[in-house]
Image (cartoon, rainbow, N blue to C red; front, top):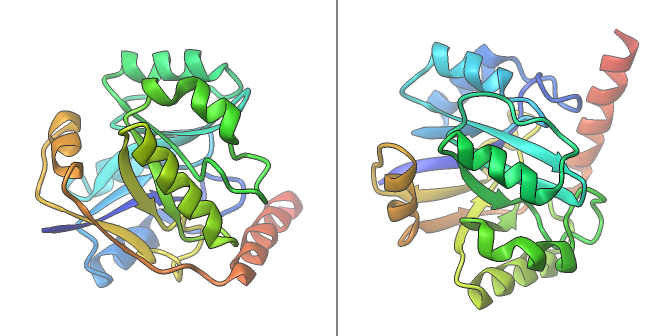
Length: 215
């Protein structure tokens, strides 16, 4: 079984300072077999990292829509932000990509879709992130799990790592897969291995944003 990290950021995100070389080294050290790089509103970091470590990287993006964020996997290019959820999904599908909803019911994060927006597109997505290690209230993860199960969507977990410390906090155990459709098949009987991250970790993202504004 592969250990798969499905939600991680690099310095290509405005709130992260993790260098690409350090990300690869950390994955090798933590025995992560596959890494979805899901930077905010760009796939450029993921595409660059995929050239550096093609055996490791799934090219992804966390895309801001007009009604909250979506996760995209198996991309070939960046999906632009601030489109409607429906148009964003269409852009992802046009690349042969897969669609998930990240931290859909997180009450703290303004980027979360919330219930009404998630329900409006739930039948158009492949998966729902039912455990996000950065969620402060675990009840919000439980509500995401209930949402996925009620609508028969595949379930994912992710560390939402913005630091190397967080990488691997929430991973999936999947059988080896090759490409998006095989990934979906493997996800149907995957196992989640997850631990919440300390809520203090959000200060690391704020520090990264401050550093980048100052540079």
